[in-house]
Image (cartoon, rainbow, N blue to C red; front, side, top):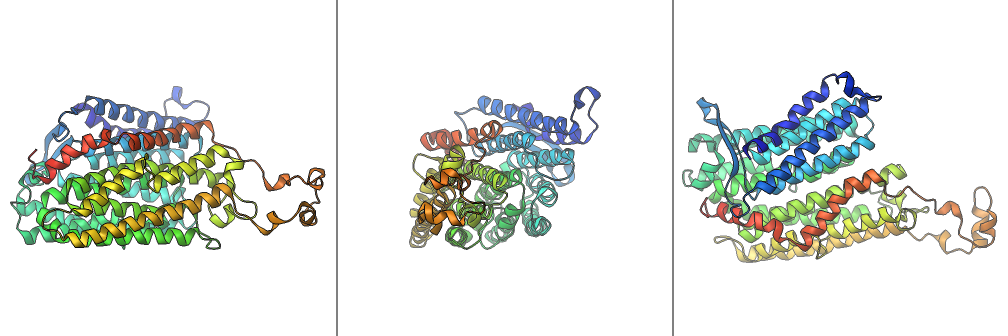
Length: 545
């Protein structure tokens, strides 16, 4: 188990180095570019298999206990240790990261985004995977910070070199926001380490803030929370996200939404809740207030983008929806209750599955139409995916209703548990305030349903236009090249309903696991909650089961 966890964290980094080296003659094949893409699929596939074996070997009877631990002294002068381990909180995020990265490399093997060398692309994706997996596996505060920062450079280059329009500006905005937040976060981490005498996250969680004064905890939560809030992202620190998603290639958007955003919320749960509970209790009402503003703001922004004539970009709309969904995660954390925190962790996983699938689908639509502009997609020619690419349209509708929280799918449970947690927050928090937050959050779910259903109607069904209500005789003179014989007979012009390529085999391979897990998590939430609940109970109780 120790070896498996170390392999999961280190293998992508070694694979990234190997991707940049010249391939051995026997492995070059006829197409060196395809050879390096196969290398990426192989490495991420091996990491996914190792993560699954790790999950199978995990002691599910004791998910609150740190397992597969490695503890080696690294910098004795600062008491920094290479300390790895997983429990019921980190294991699902580890599996989600390994799965999404594998699906992204598999998708890229067949649909590589336009840009520089495939070698650099594969190496960057593998470094990104290694940094993310390390973030969820390390148990030392300084190592957590290093892993947290390790993902910034790969994502910057994925956006700047393989992205679309305005990619340079979006990449710079992404890295400046996150770096500025990280500087403040480092100060908070150093404050905790120096005042407590250790950077060990397990020891600090067991101490449960007893070795830190309330003022130290408040300063630490403010500093660390700011850096985590930028990465989450929390309103009003979210403005880098829509630009980054709009400019990023498809796989970049999938990894950004499905994996990188989870690092911020994971830090709130793993670091701030158990290590600085008094500081969290001070800021919890403000965190909840920002969270519900983000829920409503994200939904209203999506509604504005979805309306006719707004020239809204579908990728940008899904990015703004992430601001709202992550608001639910932050609201659950702010309740400081087992119910709310479990809901936040469940919503984390559900968002990774559903939004990852949505970005895959939007990327496929953009490839087919050459644009993600909603007005163009739903214009006179109409996307009308139900009639032109029915499987693609059906899967987009499925992902949309999963995102709006339809009961029976993964998106429902996280939001419901979060709202339940807000109804009865932890002792010392204002119930009237949190019940107000709960009501605002519930209103946000209605707004989410509204914009998602508008998107489905416009993209999957198309829009009625004045031409569509005219008789065939009235329409014929407007045809550019004259009516076809079938049109003169009253049939619908063939030019108005050109067929699109429906879901391809490689797309089905990349998307089916996400859709299946969305259904599984919705119908059998106990699989995930059985892992997280004991670990959350122990975390909130100061390391006591």
